[in-house]
Each structure stands twice: as C-alpha cells, then as structure tokens.
Amino acid sequence: METESRLSDRIADSILSMITVEQRFLPGSKLPNENVLSEELNVSRTTLREAIRILATGGILEIRRGRGTFVREDFVPGRMEGMSSLTSAKVKIRDLYEMRLIFEPEAAYYAAQRATEEEIQRILILGAEIEESIRQKKDRTKVEQAFHKSIARATHNEFMNRLMPVIYEGIDKGVQLSRALKEVEQATLTDHKMIMDFLKARNAQGAKDAMRIHILHAMEQLPME
Image (cartoon, rainbow, N blue to C red; front, top):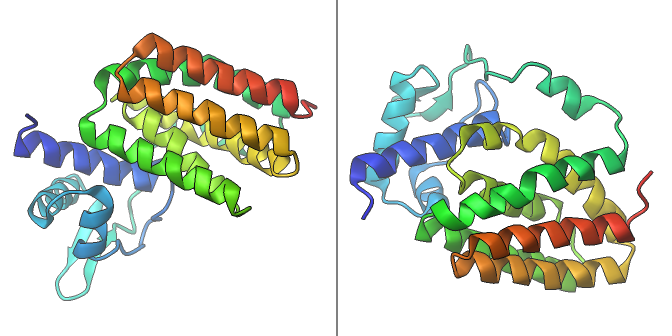
C-alpha cells in the first residue's frame, strides 16, 4: 500500500505536471480551491495540503493567506532544450504520428506494469469520456490529450512526461482530422477499449501492441501530409 508521504510526493508531481507539461496554470495563476483539486486528484485534503507544502518549499507555489495558492510569479518552468521550438514548428502530421508511434506503445507497456490502481481508474474514466464525446459529436481534444497523458504519467518516468507537449500536437491534429471521418472515430472506440482492457489486466505487451495498432490505424486512415 502506498504510504502517505509517497502519495503526497506523487500528488506534488501531478500538480507540477499540470504547471509545466499541461500548462494549465501559468506563473501568477491561482490553483483551484482545496475541495475541487482534491476531488480531481482523488486524494484527501490533508494529502493535497502536504503536496502543496512540498511545492511551496521548492519555490514553485506560494500560499497567500486568505487568498489561496498561486504559482509563484518568478517561477520559470524548466524546458528540455529545443522543446518549445518542436511544439511551435509547422511539422507534417506524418512526422508527429511517427513520433507517437515511437513513444506511446512503450509508454503503454510501462504504464501497465507501474500504474497505481488509482491511475488505471483515471485512464478508464477518461476513455469513457472520449467514447461519450464521440457519440455526442463533441470536441474531444482535451479529454483525448488527458487520456494519453494519463498513460504517460502512469509510467512514472519524468522524461516521458516532459515529451507530452510534442505528443499533444499530434493528438490535436489527429482529432481535428478524424472528426470528419466516421470510420476513424469507430476505430478509435474499438482501439481505446482494447488499450484499456489490457491496461486493466496489467498485460504490458498487450497494451503496447494495442497502442501501436491504434496509432497505425490513424496513420492508415488519416491524410498524412
């Protein structure tokens, strides 16, 4: 069973990822209140407070009495060399999907081995939200990003998490293209179910193969220009 201290460390990592990887909170931004954030992260407020204390001690967050918790205005998220130019560059969709093909099957493999039960449940919930978005013909870009990012985070490999801004670009473009193609959306439903089934079963090789099939299906069906 995960100890309280280890859990608070992991939650601190999750919040840091929201700041540096997802860029949900920029320097000077206020974090959601305790009730909202603890519910999203599925932890107690006590654990959340300890995670925030860790980040405050590290000079990332600032607790302002009576006002809430903020990302420090002088915090500069560390970037891997050249990462910002990769995400802003006008690259071909095929290049982005080849990057995903190299990266994501291995992420699924390690996620199946290392994910906590909480992380598996989060992935399954996001998969269900994607399915519902497709059926209701709603934009699923953000939830699709969250699904793939949750798998990467479950590897517990910081380098993989730092690569996610590049992967986001491929997911974003792929979702935009696939919304007009019903056969692609149907394949997404089938492929995601297969990925989730293998992750739930802790079948690492199956999860890896399912993710590879999912990306190859997209590369076959989408205009790769």
